[in-house]
Length: 316
Image 1 (cartoon, one colour):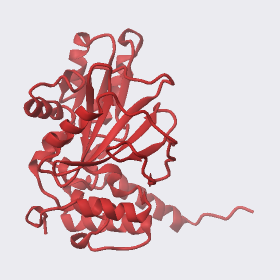
Image 2: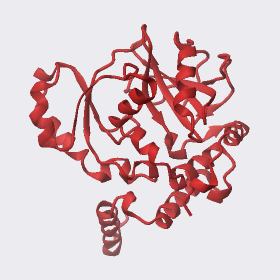
Image 3: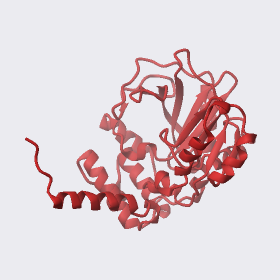
Image 4: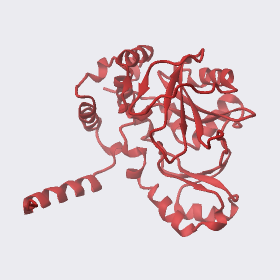
């Protein structure tokens, strides 16, 4: 027997939907509000509360990092176009990144540049992550520009970007669309291999590998030390692999990571490995936003002990 839905319940759900849909994006909200919302979400996820200014584990410190750590340099790195300029400035060239074909501040600007773009490319929001707001164009002569523009238009809405996250580093950025080179770096089983280095102020400590095809999202994430010994640890619901191939340019990845991570309490350096050289995907400051548990807890605490957030760079 179906339960009748009362009018009061419908009104409540409608108000809730409207509140979520029309509330200002997170970057416009006061710090106190952002802290409360994030801490409420943390408690729902992990079942306990903690003091942001006394964080112990790596998971806890990522929440303090994204909410309180103020460093304007991060804004020049999390933007996917400005990131390429940062790499060029610090490494002397931008050949370690996918080539940028153009960056656009409006749908109209993007549409006008369509004819200049090559046959294949990748479109990305400059301030999104986790595989969101990305389009792979294999052959632009076979796609509908009108449909692409309709999708891209959504990327200019701050609510659909990381301006609507708890991560302070994004808050001074403007939504744009980046067209860049499609890197065909895959293994024999047609999966993209990522190598993600955990770096603490110029010191590289651990790396984990992922193998994904953008279809299955329960792909393995496997931790290794710098001698390529597997570490008994896991990230979230993801399984671990029995083994993983050490990248050809492993030593070079470490040296690049040391240089680019200097001065930051934590940054994860994300690489792909081509035949010729390592390719940088991005520098990640707030992995999973701190909402994917690291097990065992002792490893989470070990990582947390490596991360020192300067008190004078934390907002109060």
